[in-house]
Image (cartoon, rainbow, N blue to C red; front, side):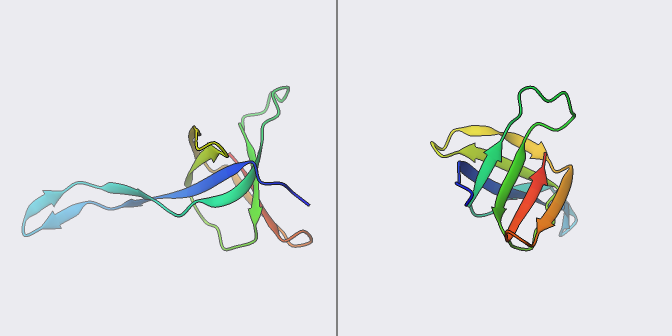
Length: 95
């Protein structure tokens, strides 16, 4: 059993463009909070910051926002790799 220690939110961006000939700026929005387990190996000298595990679902995000279980923002990160762990029905994301 994996205990949840925070939340992951998928960050999506909307493309800007033109409306009636006037420029419209690009925008960003956050998805729903998904409970997750956030791990940070301080001893690791790798390029990633955190490993995140959450319940199995479709996932193809480029950027995410991590918060701990006290709703303090850990940071916004670019997704490095995504792995679907079928045996334990979890998704593993390295940021």
